[in-house]
Amino acid sequence: MQILKAGALYFALVFGAGFVLGTIRVLWIVPQLGLRMAELMEAPFMLIVTIASSRWVVRRLALPSEAYSRLGMGVIALSLLLTLECTLVLWLRGLSMSEYFANQDPVSGTVYYVMLGVFAVMPLLVARR
Image 1 (cartoon, helix red, strand yellow):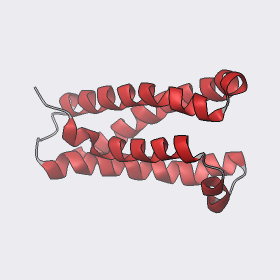
Image 2 (cartoon, one colour):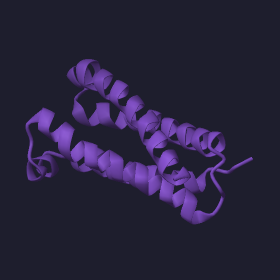
Image 3 (tube, helix red, strand yellow):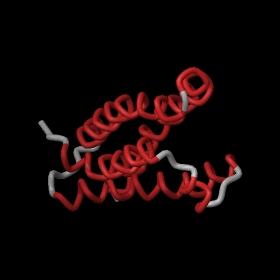
Image 4 (cartoon, one colour):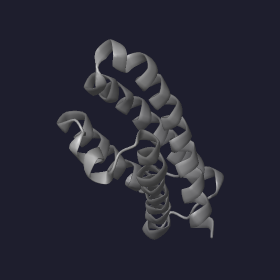
C-alpha cells in the first residue's frame, strides 16, 4: 500500500509541474521559438522536477531502499501518467494514438520517451540519506 501511495504522490507532483510548464510552453514559448525548441527547453526543468519529487516522496514516505519498492513506485507513477495521457490529454487534443505518434517530432519526441524512462527509474536512482 505504501508503494501505491508513493507512486500516486510522485505522479501527482510531476504531472502537476508538467501541466504548469506545458501550459507555459504551449502559450508563450511555442509561438516564439517553435515546438521542437520549446519541448527541448522544457526537458531540463522536468528532469529537475522528477529528481526533486522522487527524492522528496522517497524521504517523506520513508520508502524502503529495496529495488522492488523503488521501481514499484516509478512503475505505478508511469502507469498513471501514461493512462492519463492516453485518455484525457489525447481526448482534449482530439487525437488518436496513431495521430499522436505520427505527429511527434523525431528529436523532442525521443527526448520525451527517454524522460519517461528516467521518470520510471528515478526513485531507484535517488539516494536515501
